[in-house]
Image (cartoon, rainbow, N blue to C red; front, side, top):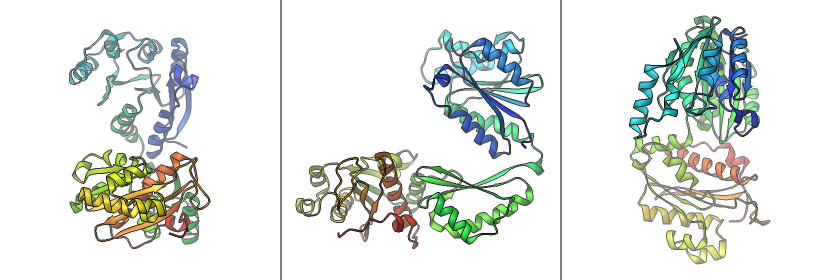
Length: 430
């Protein structure tokens, strides 16, 4: 049973109609669970004043904490502040702190402060402001029927920051130390959930009952979670996490929210070395993922998207004979692509990929889902051929992830062969 009774109230016609998928309640529930709080009830209502007021009054009598999400914007269908004021029988006032936030937000963006914007500063009398560091609408807190009500924005990045920086730390303080929940996370690539579970079952049949083991698939990584709910269990979790690290080895990308793209960038920055890319079937996806990381320009100057044979020849100097004799999807072609990219960019490392994303274009010898990957440096370029049947999105995401993982393993001097090279290797005559 959760230490605190927490309920969620989501508001918006777009949620009721299905035009917008409700991801905010899942994110909120996950944040709460990380500190040992489970959501007891969730309600979604349309942009209807009476329905909102009735639900706020009812839920405030049933729970310790009520988190209201949505309805803080500048338009007429944003009703949360007015509804909470009516439910609490309080007047609406223009809050000076909220107004100052709006003025600063608009000035930073050279955006005029309009009357609709000012509506976001009209809040229930006596409410406490909750900071929003990136959005125009502040959050706010009010106590009604001994229930703490937190009003939060519907924009997911704004909600995430507000939960992480403001709301969750406040709620965590309400939990007794001996009942605090600890969640230890590791990000894993290259082993499926069923294989992970079987490995753990085979190697650790004595897994303790008070260390909860969980998995969350978040393509392309799998998050392994160890949850403990007491000081003694947390100490056990530390030991079992170390055992998992020994078992899974270099399949672990890192702890917490580690990502492949940032890990590769960090490794290259540490070595003061650079990388280039020669992409065909991924269409620039790998370059896009690398440049999502701040500071990528220190290690990545250029990549090449050569989708056609003509561009492979013109931009990367792939020999026409190579393409004629072996085809675009071949060991010889990705090697030539990698060598051409290295020569032109003068980078230290390279990744090259060429495959058949589908749904058309495959053959018996080269089916849809087949990809050749080359990775290495000027001294040594490795290749592998994988078979990744599935839709186009899955194929491109997995190729990008595997490519980054292979170069990551090279950067850390890993000698271990990843599972996916065994399980997904495609055997053909090269």
